[in-house]
Length: 434
Image (cartoon, rainbow, N blue to C red):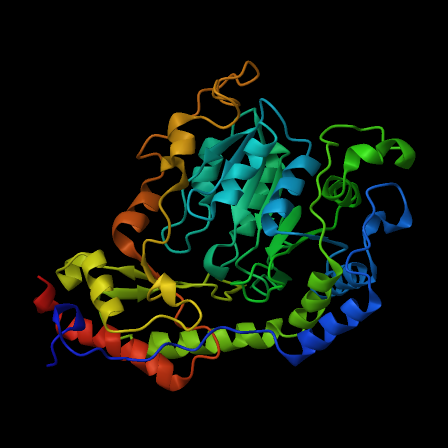
């Protein structure tokens, strides 16, 4: 048995893993065409035909809507902007509450605060890590106006249960689909399962435009408001004849023509890129199946998972060591991904700290020094963010969950074999870690 690298032994792998590069000659030619046209953006912040953007933006929106079989697609400069637009379009404001996930990127939970509403954290499922419908139901109050669900790691949320809860309470479902373009639940695309869906085109997502996002909805009224908020709503409501002025404070969340042109080419690659991820995951799961302390992430029944990240549940009782010790030993056997060398080996302990434990929520300070919106007069409810409110999330973070990115194309079978060897080496020599 070879000595573990963490204890001075030789690494399993000595070269970087290949970078995840999805852009190529097609995108280069599309950029060239836009630059030669001289129209890098066509948006006007006045009531004019160009209020809706230029030809590339409109074409991208049309192609996205067609691909995902949805009535409206609205391009924005980031998924974060898309989340903010979604909250605004739902007429959410001071005194309202929005149920959010504690186990995701911060923007999902911050979105209600942008409109002075209060985020209320529900726990996640033990097997699938999306919002737990039972916990969501427990958090519903007369002030609840929306649920922001997250298709975490590429797994669609439990749309049957959560949509039914929303229907019973007449509240809106906003689907953060940043990590799950191409995922499906009951033959319907993730992102189109709720009332509004938001996709990310950030540089490390399945497909990307550098930065960017797409909002989708089948609701005409919501789509109208989303487009207004994206582009200086207050400047055009009079000429457009808008009578409902709730949240008609606009922003500049507009996508450029260059980004849209790249997105059009990237969309054509989505299916092949997600298929490669799924194939790689299946290979890894088979190769690691005899390590009894690891249980691969489950896929929800009637769902297609597209694996933004791959996750395992770790059993410390079987391994005899803490998850963090095991993961650090595996990382010591491997190398970073090329072009992301400064980030270290992309295997993580527990994903992210539960969001409600961040200083923002612990101190309840967002706007100004007085603790708004929590301590402002329109908020009549005391919302707790103490440790223990989401026990499943905390256990996943502290003890159980392992996530990694070492399955993205163009990882070859040889690359995947190195990952498998590293896990096996640590498992076989785990007594060195005690």
